[in-house]
Length: 115
Image (cartoon, rainbow, N blue to C red):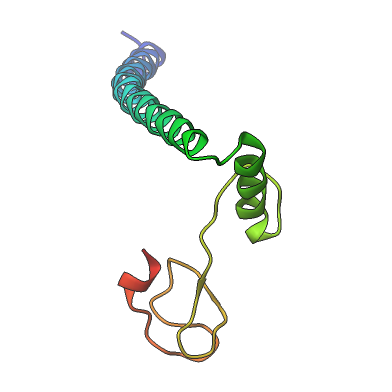
């Protein structure tokens, strides 16, 4: 067996190992996707029940859509996403959830405030 053959066999072994790891990650991803689908199904059910109850007490679909748009625009972008804004209890400037202290005034952030 030549040095080239050894090198080729090593590369083939590496490729098979990479393929096996990718296959395992793919299986893990399928499980995570199924969990997310279950969560979406549950949230859809909750939203449907909420909308029907609100309609029964006189809150129209038009009113709901207006409130959804109002909440969506709180971060300055009409993008269909809700981003909760947190502010420092001391200087009232915006806080990022990843920071342990306010980057403006240095006050320690109580993580319970960010929930």
